[in-house]
Image (cartoon, rainbow, N blue to C red; front, top):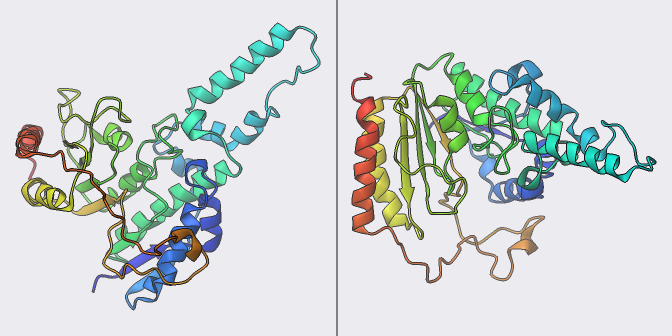
Length: 333
């Protein structure tokens, strides 16, 4: 059995559950995992999360961005700016207000990534816990390390994006590179893993592979399978249409992912799930959040009448895209 670590604590779940886009999700997911008895498995060890230092965060992110995150709550509340609320010249107050909004928007901290209580701690813990996972692998302490609260694949070097404040994945891969020559990053989220791809697109040591829904107007609008630059080296995008079924996804793995794995020959793999795989009972055990699973209290979600739009013609098109993108991998081993 592989030696497996699971990074978690109740305090950490409380911090991560403050993320506005995922209120209480972490607490519910971990409670469900505990209710199924998965944390009592013989070969699983629970590891405490840790905070990343500013120096560690700045291995990838810009110092300006990290320093702004640390004062973002004060800035958002107005405590970090001049207060001219008593100024009789309304135009001055309005101008300053727009300036504040512009600054938040510069760092991606408006709209989908709004400032929230504890954002600095959230950033440090999410990044630090993924760094801890990478360190455990580098030290050969474990074969697999699970960090469910990580995987923030949209965050940019100097800005938040797509509900992602910090790109813990990029930081984790950079840590893995200290011990592993070649790293495969596989992204199964419905959205394109644009932030991670952007960080490693010009190196042949990290292969980024993203399987995602791609359609006009669908966030983030990238990942078409057509290289964005002639200098791009180890980037594979697999754009899928609506209704991706289990059968089609299995074919994608068999016909596209497995050959890429053999061709690239990674020394370590980073998997961003984005979806939940399971091999446990559909009947949810009673626990703290049991009532949230009404009316049937089952894990199974009926796909309804959604048809798989990934026709044979589309799969043939995707295979040709993958073949073209993988040409740069041919002479790398």
